[in-house]
Every structure is written in C-alpha cells, then in structure tokens.
Length: 410
Image (cartoon, rainbow, N blue to C red; front, side, top):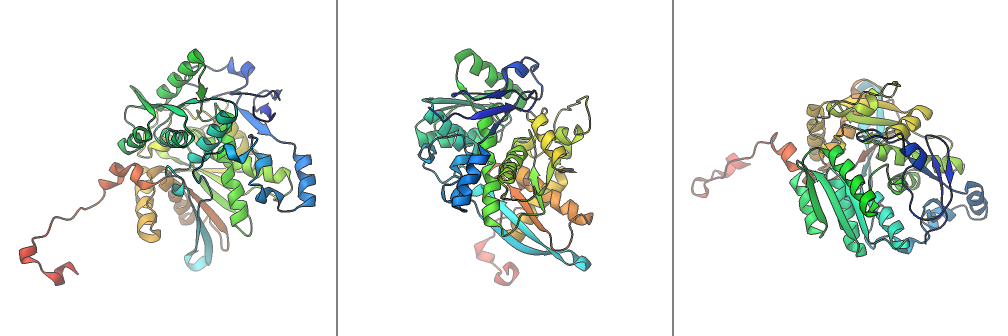
C-alpha cells in the first residue's frame, strides 16, 4: 500500500488522510454535473516542517533523493523503468532590438519516452497503481495522455484502456495501438470521451488517470518545476505554458508552491497561461463568477477543450500568484512552429508551439524586459500531428536525373 498521503479539497477545504485511491472530494462531487469543470479537485500536501528539518541536516537532501518526500509514492522503484523527466533546457540570448536582450530557455518535453509532457503524470499514476495492486488504468485523451499512459503501462506490465475523440490525430492513435493498449474512439469530442470514461470507471471500479479527476496527474506534472529549480541558477522571471484543461499549469504551480513552503525559493515566477483563441475558456472566465464555456476550435488539438476540467484550481493558482493569460491565433501557432523548427531545430506539435507564440506576442508588445530569464514549456513532439503544419509547406517536385542542373539545385 502507498504511504498515507494528505489530500485537501480546493473547494470546501476538507482534508483526507486515509490510504488508497482518491479522486475528487466526494461531497463536492455531488455538485458536479456532466459537462462541467470539476469542483472538489484534491491537492496533495506534505509534512513540510519535517522535510525542512531534513534540509537543515543536508541541504541537497531533496535533490539527492529525487524529491521522494514530495511525491505521493513510497519508493522510486515503483516508477516505470523508462527515463521520464530529466528533459533538456536549451538556452539562448534573444535580442530586444534597442532594448537589450533577454535569456530564452526552452524546456523540451518531447524528450520523454512517448514524446510528450504527459509522461510525467502517467509515470506517477502508474507507480501509485503498482503500489496499490492495480493492474488496469483508464484514461480519456485527445491523444497525448492516451499514448503516454499506453507506453508507460506497457513498460510496467499494466493494462491501459484509452478513450479518444474520433478525430484525434492518427499518429497519436498509432502510438496507443503500438503500445498494446485498448483504444476506444468515441463519436464526439474530448469532453464526450472524458465523461464516458468516468461512467466506465464508476460502473466497473477501474482506476482512472483523467487529468484533474486524479490528483496524481497534478503531482506528476509538478516535477517539471523541481527540474527548473535544479537546472537554472536563479528562478525564471516568466514561464509560458500551453493551457487546455488547466492541469499542466496547475502542476507547475504546485511544484513551485511546494518549494516555496520549504523556503527553497522566495517567490513563484510569473506564469503565463497561453491559450488558442479558439479554445480560451479558462482565460475568458478568470474574472467571472458566471462561467460561460464555448465550443473549442483550434489546430492545437492537445489544448482544444470545451470544458477546462481543472478550471477552479488553475484559476486559484493564477489569481493567487499573479499569473497572466494570453491568447494566440492558429496562424500565430503555425508560424511559431515553423520558427522553432527553423531557428532552433525543435519540431514541436501545435499545442507546444502555442506557448512559443505567447512569448512572441509578449515580445512584440514589449512585455519582455531586458535581462529577464524566460522559460517556454514545449510539451510535445511535432511528429504527433504533421497534418496541421504540412499544409503550410511547399513540397518540391521530383527532379529528372537525366537533365539535372547542379548549379540550379545549389
């Protein structure tokens, strides 16, 4: 069994310390209806005062133990044998023209085993399941979370059942099938797949990985904050994050919040939630008590959601720690994808390019200042969705080797 974790409901403040599987707060769950953002999402908290004592005795204790005291599992051996995390951070100086320069840091999450950020969440979900004797895990996904869970489960000899919208990119579905998971396409969108997976989970008592619904997803994704803490000599001034359902940004905030409570950092960086203009329900409702979620439409399928399931937690983090939001167009996303590839040699999927489009917009609007350290979270590999960008490329015709003009080629 897993160690006794403490869960706190972000909605009502109720606290749970019993072992085993937890999803959202049972009392607050009664307020949830199908097709809504989730109330009652749980936050895992740790014995920070006890961890501080260990840090006094050994300052680098957490780093050397791979932050085990800040993870809701008993042993690192429960994690998959694949190398999840430890992704590269590429740095370059970028000109602000007559305003000097700033340091750009690209955190490349496509280095993960299934080529996306989602492996961080899947790894922890899988490890928790392993420690609790669970062998089958269910998830709804637009593609990345599903292919991630499928790959991680394959490495752990676990079974994965993946619900996806019928229009999910074929490259991601190919991954799911190659890893040996059971793929269930759903007529409808991501939210339809999400709701169906919850019904199946409840009916058959399966273990569900769904983002926000399962607090382990947030705890897994927060590890990127720990890595940035290690990789950078000083905390970044700004971090640009692609946002759909609000779990990645919540995980990033949660990781920094853990470090803040341990006095390892003095403040949390300014985090910018980047959303596609056609899927900006989280940003649009940050200052509203009467939520109005519109149907999403964007080329960035990984952040295309009608209902940001982790809306309430993401909103709380953004407002409490002074985060900001920015919307980018599909044209800006595709342009950003091309720029990342041609200028940095990094081919990322549209959702990841959205984060870079966000910093481009901030730079154009003079919201990036001289000598700032700015991080962009690049969450997935471009080969996962080549159809989106291939339409903007000019593929050359084949050449006739009998009439070949070498000078013309050069």
